[in-house]
Image 1 (cartoon, rainbow, N blue to C red):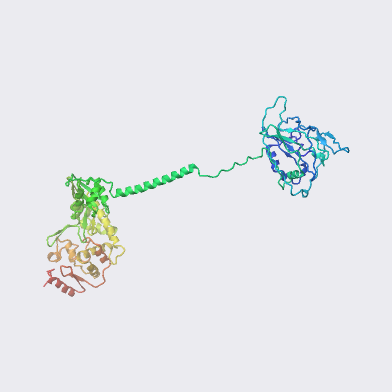
Image 2: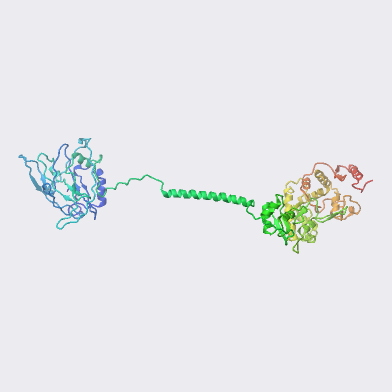
Length: 629
């Protein structure tokens, strides 16, 4: 069977196999690989138009010729005189060209004439022709490049004319001096005219190919000059334009820069405005003129507030007209935070005077507890009354606001201290047992309020709440001073606080406190009565440093002249120096001490005889009279 034909029943009627688009493209691309191991003279190239496309399809076969020889190009139909057009033949889609007798050239006769004969193609035996070795190919020969054939222009078919996809034209017989080595192969050469898109006249391909061209077509190792057909031709890529910055990108960049500039301006402006506003540049300068004001008002100003903070709070309470007016009137003077009773709609200068009054007349809820102060008020030998802690709380919280009285009284405080539970009073765990044992006596909380300036004792709070806040905060202070973790006194925390209260009341100079603490510690160790005037004066109606008469005989648990050991409660509020002295007493064997003058000079002695001499010095200075000669 011929190369390219198949005996498979699926082939077309003409004997040629039905070629699909994929098979056609694969044949063209893989021709070089398929040629390996095959006879190059038997290879054919097929192209078949896709369904519905007007492209010109053709099939060619060329035979290899010996170098330097040429042969005639046989046609499929008898030779036609030059200039005469061959009769067109219609090829059905997917079919083959009808087989017609072909004119085969024969070698020239002896008389030099050429005889033409017509032989059916089917009668020719298919004998393979051995391929010429590659070594015989001239190295300098190159395959001519083929130009892709564009699609044929559609033109109307005139009446009586046959439409064809390609035109087969017969050429004149070759000259007598040219011969074909193998006439059997020469009859497969065809000329195909492919119409140009821009011209109605067909363009003829070259009628003959050289041996070099044939070899290049079948040699996969060299440039064969093969073109893949009209359908496989790719359009050349359009030339790339030089890259330029687009206007859109430029606009975007300008927009980003503009936004950044606006943001920076807004940021700087905001910071500047905030700073100027903080300084009060934009504040109103409104100020009132009536110094008497219109009504009472309670104002609570937090600690560490700035003058501007003061001004804003006072403006909100309608005390002053503007923050700027108050800041200007204060003129940088420091003002303490706290609770104040002021008048509304007063001049800023008047408000500043009320807030900075040294007598604290306008302060509300401010309680000052100095070291050594007791819960109850005490009258001295000179008749002077020292208000106790309860009295000071009453004075600080009692306030008349537009005819309405607020605050707590001493009686209310004593009732709360005597009968409230330790938990309600905020008593720490290390003092709870002693406090519970004295329920009903308000003095059970003596010494549990530390000396300090209590800035905010709210007039609206109940007596229990007021005492709870003060005792709980005081316990924190005592513990921070080392009552629990730095105690070297050998006493329990509450006992240490009781002993420290005696040191607080006995010592006038801080440097003497550790020695007094040692005297207390030594007497307790010897089971000796403390015999301290301070403990006897705790229950006395009149406090006197020169204890005499019935004071020695008073039957109270706080009278250390009568009872051994420590009193049941502290006898005063305990400051940090006295507590630290009792936590770590000075080393010594002192058992006695006495103050010898009004300056507070204190003498210490190990024996009673030495103490008697020191007491005589106090008698000479008229500080005491009891026991003097």
